[in-house]
Image (cartoon, rainbow over all chains, first blue to last red; front, top):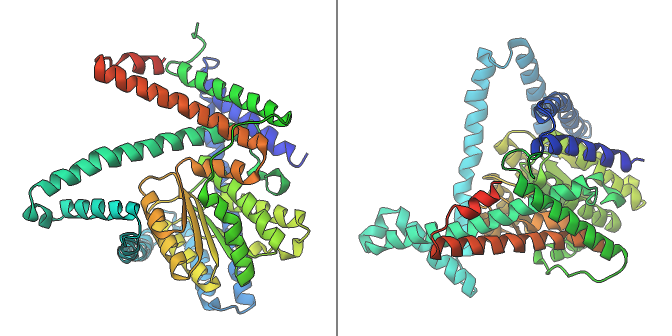
Length: 206
Length: 260
């Protein structure tokens, strides 16, 4: 029953969402009601995240693992910000100030790491080791020159070729992958709905 | 005839029913031991055993992250993949670290990995602290995951799910510590980054087939075959539409039919 119960719940919930979406059986927006349930459940489930963070970092601190000071900082920040949010609400001045002036700059800093990572990954990809890599190199250089003013200065045809690469082969490939992925996602959800794919149940259910 | 269907849902419903019927047909054939068409080899999935084996030999952990997923198709695909990965790690008694941005998914991952170690007869090897909820914030999660990968010196890094800009941060972190990397996402903007930075990359729908492919279960493989047949039918439709639009100036007929 441990495996069957989740499968039954999944099947019934999916059917309850699917049938009124596709067929004219009810005027009530069943999906909207289930979406509301999901929001309520999600709000409760956030506690699971807090519990997990507390357990993992609490364990780091107790056992004095490498970098345990960072775990202390994480736990203090988590609970201090949580209490501040409860006291001040999410629209509170201090709460918003911390979010805008601490979290956002840190996120932007991490995001800026991408510049170096892109350069490093591009260097490895552009090393011509095969015909495919050669095609990638040529296309990449043309597109880069298209977006940089230097391209048009070298030859006025470069921006046109770059635009063609982006508009025709690139768009065609992206749409083909997108089409396959949408269909694959659709098929995967039907497999879950029918209980054929049980990876989410773990163990031999997978 | 189709008055019980809501507007513009008739054709898509027909496709769903055809897909379910095909699934049922191949399911019956597989259960009866009759031959079914084989799925082509997917290099990224063939490499999973090799990557876990390498981690086992090196005595280093395996890392898995699904990126930015929830209870959606990519989420279920990541769970199916993790289910297989956890079973492999449990069999070889290799440590597995799973990090996620979703507290909902973290609870499911915990259960998947725990169950895999239990069934392998190694409940003591399962460490609940290795199944970690990181943060809902995109870059906070990226920074923390990067740190975990570097500190734990993971030997294999699996990234299967849906990724935004953090994809390259994970992939480059894995490359720098010399981990063997298998990645897959349906986000076409991030796929090139994975192709550039990882050893193996699953493209588009391959991540959805991973669970069925890795299980080597003919019943599940039959469902992927059904999917391929529907995809071929769609390709025929695209071809017919292209011919109708290019040579006969008919751009609306097929669209109207599909919107029934």
